[in-house]
Length: 420
Image (cartoon, rainbow, N blue to C red; front, side, top):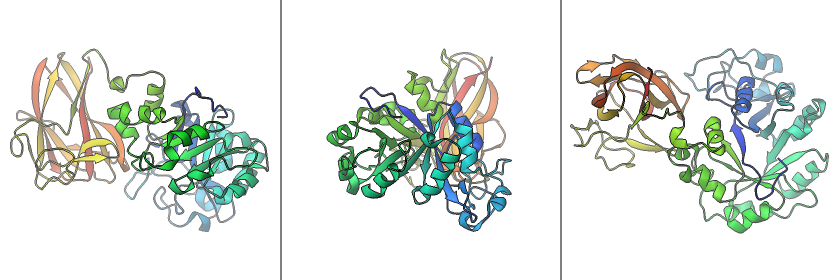
């Protein structure tokens, strides 16, 4: 963390832990994030009615648990009676067995394993600091905020082990270099345009004299259009581009993928078996011929991401997907199978509701039957979902994806994985 040299290795921050596998801000999500390669886990902290720091992003428990109300109105005992929802939560997300952890429980769990980025907690920094002292983990907690320099410097002066990261936006870029004495261990740069002052080469160079540089790549507007989803298409659209700007810390929603790339992996092979065993068909690339031939869409193109006259191809924080799927709509695709065998056919889908919708795959009149798509808890939470298993001979096959029940889902691609 303290290495801010020019060749300092890239550090991964896991946004709310590994929420793709476990509920956000849960102990299980934190442990999984560390296992998946994150050196730092970002968590969100709120105070209960009886003054105990617990992990919760929102001021209420409504989105992520089976409870209701403000965290500040609930006692720790009441908080501990709640169960967390899957992933990023939401009204229709499934309940899990996982409970809301206290900050103390988290610090004991990460001790000697990782650092925690203490987000949404600057106003309760003294309470959090008390927990870190009691658990002997002051040097494991990364405090973060955008206070004035004097306030931040005063807090850092309390203890030489305190780690502090300063957030800078367009109007606060001039705070770099004004800290007296100890400098922040890092600066979180938030920018929506490459012309913003805080991301200019000289400013980044100035920061790196004493500190690390963090950007967030979860969605548009945090680091312009450099995102996780864009990186999965082409690292030059995201991760690689921001490292060229001098960034050496990234907060991500794709821990495993960025760790794979950081260690030299070719993203073309990410979750992709080589040797003609995996084939991907992009949902935004149906057969030619347009409306009524390559696809049927009931309304005008709502997104204008692609040239098709009506199919809804949308850009979702860097992902290119077919969206706004209505009953009776369909799209026809071609897949070139290199080896005969049984294939697991999956769709990379995101959805924020239950039911998410249903589809079937039609192979020249032979159908898969109705396939119910799963709620992934957020529109940008893309996951591979199993659609069917099918024996396919070597050669070119044409299939149709038909919407049999509408829903709020997005389809990125269809993947074929040889099972034999």
